[in-house]
Image (tube, rainbow, N blue to C red):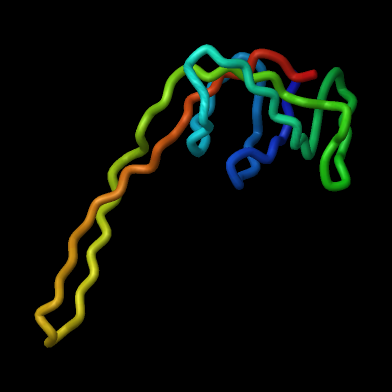
Length: 103
């Protein structure tokens, strides 16, 4: 089992080979190949490497599958006794990527 912990989109994500993940929006077209080079931890063939803060020689090769939207959040603001009510919704733009290789 090979996996890596990668910093992408302001989050630390545990990535395994052949799985897909939803990250914050990455500009690009579906089918584009992206290399994530902020690898913090790597486990491959019973050997692990820890970066300080990241590993310079390793990267994760990913492919953009599609752009999606996250679930809808409702933001409701209210001030009592002032007749102020504001209801808004928000959907985060996400990018679905597939991990092709951990180099």
